[in-house]
Image (cartoon, rainbow, N blue to C red; front, top):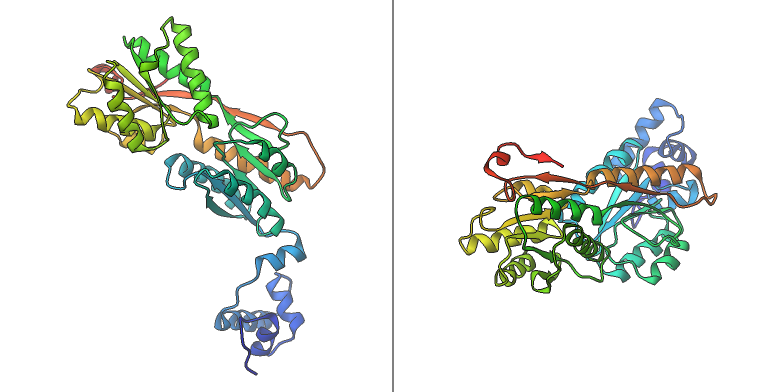
Length: 345
């Protein structure tokens, strides 16, 4: 008998010459006679049958799929997080779905609401803007959600944070200790969580070191390489002897601008970044950067999510964990001696 449309359990049973119950047992991993298993598997292959994850989740309660939503899948910070997440989820038998939001809040909220479709058992979300709508969406989420980043204490989800304020302090103090006194700052948008935190860290670090805050040494822009280059060009008119950038993407742009001017790095202007991504090691010269533990934060987030799934729906207080920053010193700020021996601080 011929069938229109995609293959079903009924068409598989007819093709294999076995009962529908036998097909169901094989597809659900239950015991069956070896000959029956062989017939069903052959029919599945020949007909191109693909199990419907939604239907299976409605029946069995789990899809064995998890989602990670981030701003930009091409950013090496998120690639590192994916490695940390997948190492945990894959070992637990879950597939990881990736979604790039472009930092659009409505898109992120839509991902949270889509958990009600039951195509995913849980969500790890890495937002850079946390609006008032987040608390409502997260409170109503149909499945567990873990945030990589800072969220208000009132938001009822687990989160894995990093201390950007402390991290900026490590970098600025290092630049000060290498003799720099006009330390410029290229930051991202102030309406983002990392932008606000890193601005606070910069101001605090200057105050701790007794250095004045100079508006002419600060540029707020987008977290992008070209933006970093343009910002560095603007700052050179104010005579900085160092430029600290709020992430490595901006710092790579700043390096490019300094090279185009024929300036020596670090002799004329030192440069430091943040995230210690693969960009930092690949840059020329290799970039001093604050390691915010991207892979570790991904791993911890995955562990928190799997733990929530194991616990079931019983309400429990949100758990907060913090990955501490460390400074990795490389040639973009180091002396000739230090360049031979990159180190962590």
